[in-house]
Amino acid sequence: MEYVVGFATVLFMGGRLLLPVFVALSVHDAILGVVPRRLSIYREYAADRGAALLTGAPGAVGNALETLANATDRPTTDLR
Image (cartoon, rainbow, N blue to C red; front, side, top):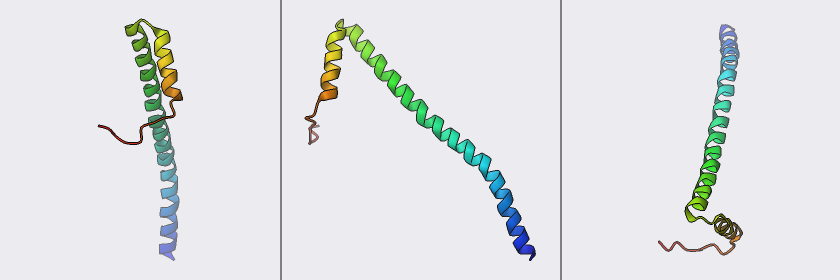
């Protein structure tokens, strides 16, 4: 009987201790999922802005980006 009570105590204490750890890891994973995506978006916008400034033709850069976004004929083989 002592073993059952001891086992139940370990399970209860482990559950109480694991919940904060689980919550902390979930928050950590959420932050690590959001931050890199936001940085990636920021870098894309910065690159597009830089291209527009370097070329002096923001309309041409915009048209090129629209053309790339609407492209349906993707390469099927790697030509490197």
